[in-house]
Amino acid sequence: MAAPIRPLKAAPRRPSALDAVGRNWPGVSVVLALAILASGYFGLVHPVFAAFRDGGKYDVDAKRAALGEREAKLTELEALQRQFAALSRTDTERLERFLPSEADVPAVITALEELSRLAGLQMLAVDTNPRKDSIAGLPSVGGTDVAVSLAGGDYPKLKAFVRNLEGSLRLFDVTAVAFQQSGAYSLNLRTYHLLAR
Image (tube, rainbow, N blue to C red; front, top):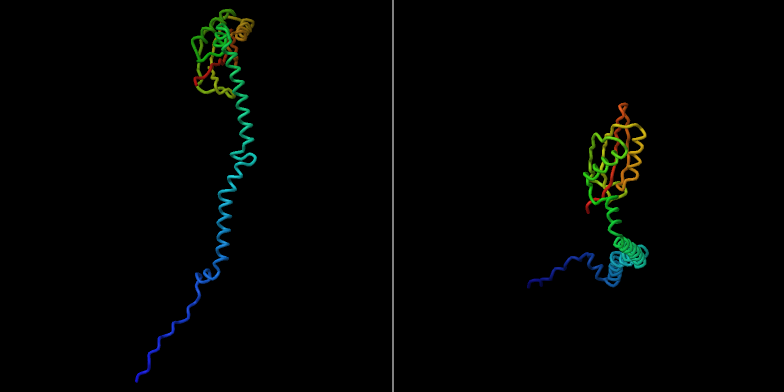
């Protein structure tokens, strides 16, 4: 009779990493849970709490302070608006002449011609250049550069012309003066206006 067939024994298996995790699952679960909690805290909860602290994005005290500043500014602007509304028509026209709402080059030339005539000088030439950019430090105010050539007078007449510029309702700044032997003068001026918004 033939010998009975014996089943072959399987070779012993080496333990895998899954076997190690399976045997230690409570410890691995705790470590994994702590890692998830820590990343959740530092990734989600901590930034939200930081936003509510001093100076954060949602700091209530800082928001209240900013609101108080804006309310004070609004109150000041409303008071200025009431004062402007209370101005008479004459005062409003004077303000418009002092700082008009546009360059108004013809009015500038007319004013300069009249001021030179009052000083006893003859205006020979005028060149104007309205600037489109604002004056430094005054974002809503623009300027017009004006070059004026005058003749027909001596130094006291030139001084009278400059005094007339100072007394003018329209604001003029003298930026340069040039004298010529022939008794002619060249002045560079700047006048101002509000820029369109």
